[in-house]
Image 1 (tube, rainbow, N blue to C red):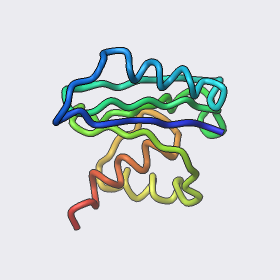
Image 2 (image 1 turned 120 degrees about the vertical axis):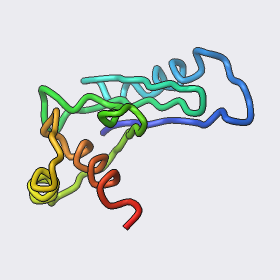
Image 3 (image 1 turned 90 degrees about the vertical axis):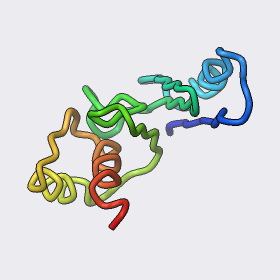
Image 4 (image 1 turned 30 degrees about the vertical axis):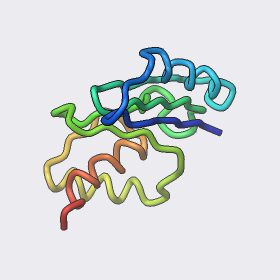
Length: 112
């Protein structure tokens, strides 16, 4: 079981450690890896129980240009087929996890 949390702070300021505190409350849900992403508009955290890609796939995952970020709790059953299709379209993956497939699929097909 994994855990994710996040919030936007475009219209209000928050304490710098708020996302760290949120992450610590989820640690029991994802004992294998905890990650935090913060920007001027969003804070995200993920705690991960590693099932797919035990050596990689740490979250949050950022796009190559660092403009898009994802935290994800779920399973994409056809992620290997989607990965092959995306690789054929020129995407290069850093991990073998399904979360990176979701990110790259969003970047490829979101506006279509």
